[in-house]
Image (cartoon, rainbow, N blue to C red; front, side, top):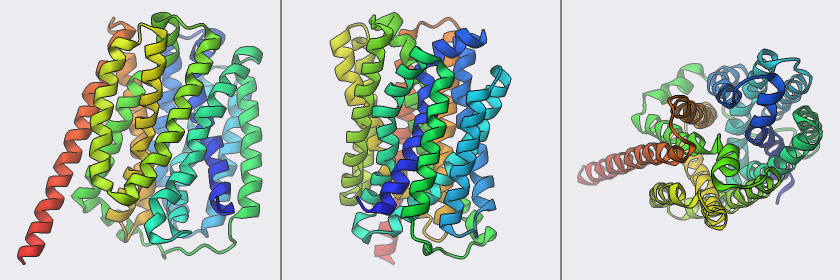
Length: 388
């Protein structure tokens, strides 16, 4: 892996760990802060909404800043936010700290995706993005399980202290490995925001929201599902999360390769497979081995769609890639928040945990239908161009 991509992956590892590790610690946080599981789940939603709201604001703020300086500034915000999480005396402060941390997320991955794609040959751009996102998937393979185990053994605050240390290591890697001068377009706010007039760009953002909601409507509550429905011990849950994270790593690599080959057919196939796997999980969650197999496959598919969607938004907004790429990260996290909220609403309304995969099925069908609509518009435009 080229050193600049490695540095971006290290930072992605830290950001991914802090985003996802809270899910494995929901029962611990809820007990320690005397709040309900759904209330603790709102820490996931708050982070996601922080990304969604913060992404365009931060993207505008750093639009004309040199790319290396922008990325270094964003990782600085990440370090401060996690330090506040570790020190938070109560639920309200922890919530605020999560939002502060989230503000760096969307812009970092958005700008980082454009930087990564610009460092390689055109036919390897999706794979370069996938390499950066390998840090995010490894966060699920290593960061989340180890962070969960650390939190269960030494308290959830210890996990955030560890993540703060990862952030410092990421800052060093970025300072050392990123080129001092990275090619960038001169930003114009009018040109950047004009991208939102393109219906195909808006469709990609919508697909990202729905696809992410399909994951987080269930995965936000995966720890209580595995403990209360499947029957895993807390220690075994850590191992299952490790398996899911391994699936994410495989999926990101697979998605990058297939996106460079045939982008839209790959995206359609992945979304259809997600509908199928969530339907299967509704049945297999009741038995340990079938649940583990299904969760691994779900992990593969969940991140296989990320490189295609990120590459698609960069292609369709080629004249304003930084804002569009950043907005797509906001869309993913709006989906995170929406999914967590839908799952929490279902539980709050009295639905059993076993119903949550069906919420994911419904939202993933929505993502699939929107993708097929986008494909039909592309084909119609191609026919018109050929006829002209």
